[in-house]
Image (cartoon, rainbow, N blue to C red; front, side, top):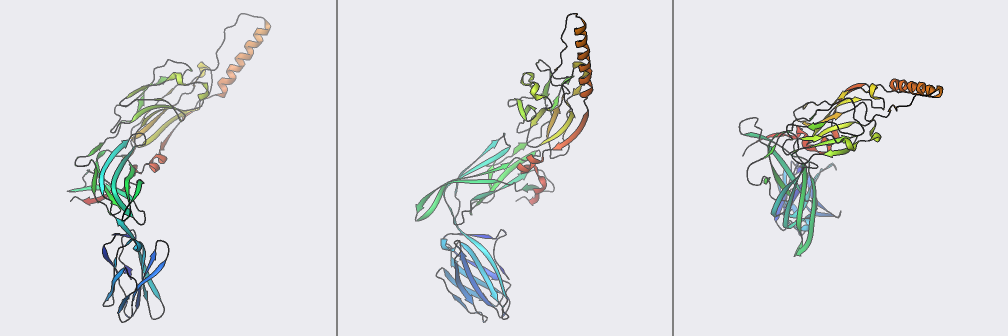
Length: 417
């Protein structure tokens, strides 16, 4: 047996409408009962159908119960707010066995859309849609929007792909009375940018019982264009980074992508320089470094929707200029089609020069002893701090988890209307 319900187990009925629910695949010579469980947990018997298929209504909201042949039973009722809850259909067999199925009811006043606006946030690479309404109600307080993202990349004739990006919803409603309590205000949803280049548009299915496939961005026609940036690179041919400048070292890219990304210099996790909108070359700020940064990685970074790292590392230590090993910033392109943000790490074998040989006057035996100690100390440092290189590749899994737009596995093929 089964009760007629939706895929998510919730059916919505407009308040005060006359409606019905069916229970199917019943067996012969069984007794059928209809029971309603309110949102507060109270159980109420709505009616029964005996083994000879005669039915009786037991509640004032029920306008009728029928059993056609033995396979189907229908219950008809008025969708008052008191009918928000769970309807249970149970079939009792002569041997005492019982089979049951249920469906949850939400009694609603549909979301009436007065306006919708969409904004772009390039700091966290999200889109935000704000839906405003003057009247809405859901007995179960279900207010949200399913966003559909459509891509115009054709796979077959008159077919395109879409996905349902995860969204975050929040409401800002104020109650008012119009015979019953209703709400007015805004419903806001936020979702992530796609990580793959292409032309996109978005529609929304509004709950409760609002418009479906409502085109929200762009509103009428056209698309938003997403293009992947070029990987960043540097021109930093340095033997070491001095504690004070100047040096010639730039982080650059031939394209920031669309929407545009932003170039940055980082030391460890700290941003020491950030490019303005549209800036494709960013000078390395030597004056932001000091000897407390010893051992930290220096990063040329392009912030876009998705980031991948290619890291060239050396052990960093203080040593004399003569022992400084040369390191050079390197950059690479995108490793896979859906990952385009590339981070390039510039690691220098020496951040500051600690040891400075001081000129001294010619002296006696005591000065000679000091010279021997300094020479010994210099060789000691030279032996302790050897640089070694290794290359590793990282993907930004945390970014992908928090920006689900980067996951293309959600896409499905659908037919154009």
